[in-house]
Image (cartoon, rainbow, N blue to C red; front, top):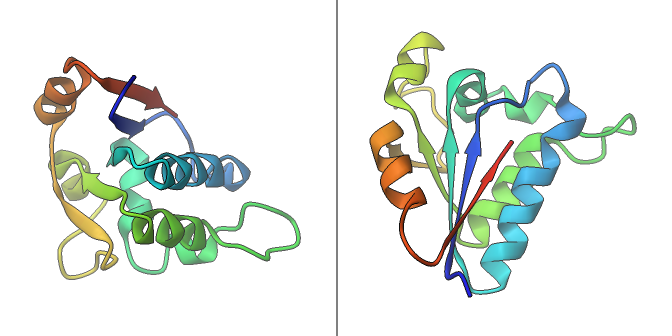
Length: 125
């Protein structure tokens, strides 16, 4: 059985916020199952780590729960959030304007290094 889940947010779009809750919900569930969980934000998704962005995206028409609410739930469950440094620069994300839940910067090498380890499950969105 796996003891770690890593999630790559790469292909999902901020233009389809209804799809953005599931990765964080699944991350929180995995953390509740005592699995180590890391979410890697790449390309456009790094914008979710910028203050004010995820707070203003909602997963449903009733606007009861923002994407940031899902992110906070996951982080509070123990999920770690890592941003691609190159994507940070591209999308003007810095330590000064990042949400407090950002745990650090990790690139493709770190992601691949984790992905090939025994006991690791990789999910991509």
